[in-house]
Amino acid sequence: MADVQFLFRDGEEAVSAPAVALADFAANTNATAVVIQPGEDARALLPHLDRLSLVEVTFPAFTDGRGFSSARILREAGYTGELRASGDIGVDMLSHLHRCGFDAIAPNTPLDLAQADAALKVWPQVYQATVVDGRKPIWALRHGL
Image 1 (tube, helix red, strand yellow):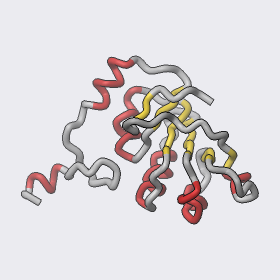
Image 2 (image 1 turned 90 degrees about the vertical axis):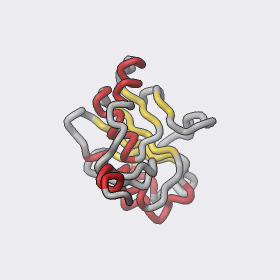
Image 3 (image 1 turned 180 degrees about the vertical axis):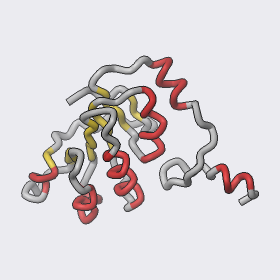
Image 4 (image 1 turned 60 degrees about the vertical axis):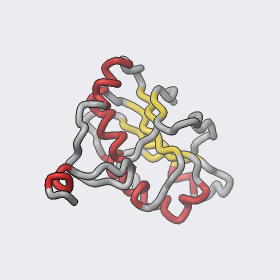
């Protein structure tokens, strides 16, 4: 597992609990951390959100965006624990990862900090509302809503 390079949770450290695979999670009643692979359904975790401190979603290739949906599902269902993206993550993904609800990023290869900072500031306005950052979408601002 790669080390967390970016943590967007103020005043907290990255969760260090050992994570189990989603397939093993149901049988392990003490598990508080789980890893979701592409193609696995994050909705299987919905009845257990209150006991989870970490959900790690893997991105095996930068072309595989299924993890974005997993994050959105979990955050919209009320998950408040650490949501970590790990794997083949590039600077161009950071803003989108954060918008979908990821608050910890663990890329396989460390990212350049200056480029990452610039990438996170690229879009001051957004088109879609999310439960994550509370920013009003640009259409709502345009119409005074």
